[in-house]
Image (tube, rainbow, N blue to C red; front, side):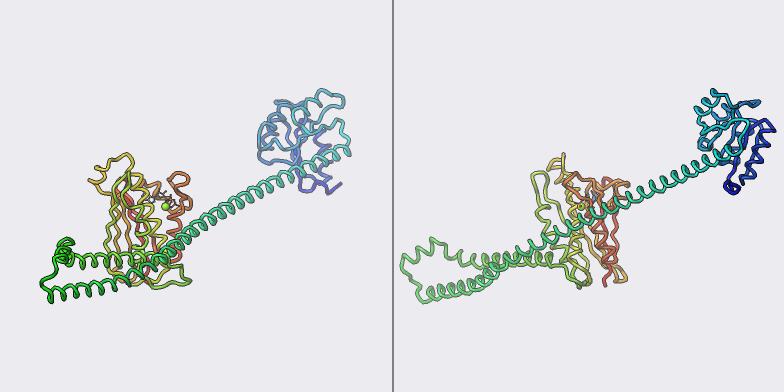
Length: 439
Ligand SMILES: Nc1ncnc2c1ncn2[C@@H]1O[C@H](COP(=O)(O)OP(=O)(O)OP(=O)(O)O)[C@@H](O)[C@H]1O
Ligand SMILES: [Mg+2]
């Protein structure tokens, strides 16, 4: 028993020196550290300054009695958990009940039975230790649950992001395949058309020569022949047919350009960076977006103005940069579409909706700079700060996922060591600047 109380402090609050003496000796011998106060006020002060592990509290004292002292200690957060044992007269059942009702854990009766007092104190200190440990375990557990919850929701967020990114790149890949397929399908008839055009030109030239030859050698043709020549306006036909053939050739060349652009766009992502002409990437992306730029029932055509500088070939993943151009251009078209709502055609035509694309190489020739600017509504500062955040969108559900610019920034800054900057003025428009190192 002598060492049981080591390190633990017990405060006796009692005004009877005899009681104090008896208890002090017993507790001291048992190894407890003992503090003594002779009235309630001083007792409360000591509890606050040197919180003991247990309090032995007398009922009858001058000043405030034991019950009031107990009430005050129990009413304060810092002291309410300290176990209090009342010291009462042997037969005073009312006091015992009242003390327990105020939150005391036990009572001991005078005259004190030393063994019993020490046994009771020992039990309550053990209980208190157990309670403290329990509270500590509860805190640790709560903290762990909190940590796990945070980890899990983080993992869930990551998973959702990864899923959305996958959907985005899958969409791009599908678009690429579709476009490649269309380009391929166009190419066969196009080849046939080009070949036939060459033959047609030759044949027509032969026919012209033949007609001329006949006219030279037979100036007087039969009246039926002369009539027919007049009827079909032979002279005009001979003059117009070569022009017609020229326009057909131009149209074929245009289709060839489109097909080349489609193939540039769809060029599957290479495993390593390849030197590319970025203008081809921009043009092919514009071609894919052409259907969104042209006039609709709601607004006139969005004017695309290109001002291309002389760019060196840039080592890059062109497929990915096309995705960047696509996201930025699509956002510009979105904002111009939204802006056109509630405005008349005449208003919009007077103030044409524009996307301006400028390219240049930095003065040290190390960086290619592409600026894509719209004259849409721009954005307020608080939105501008968040546009590159994953899943940040101001568009309605189903219209925007809020990934376009986050992915664009990743492609430009992480994959290509470049920089993606946004300048926007509310009411005037937005400009995105893409900077890519040449190699
Ligand atoms: N040119 C622009 N003018 C005004 N606001 C813009 C412009 N470009 C982007 N924003 C704002 O930035 C937000 C984030 O753009 P982001 O492309 O990342 O996502 P989104 O277009 O909403 O969805 P999606 O994932 O389909 O691209 C947009 O919702 C829009 O509020
Ligand atoms: Mg977008």
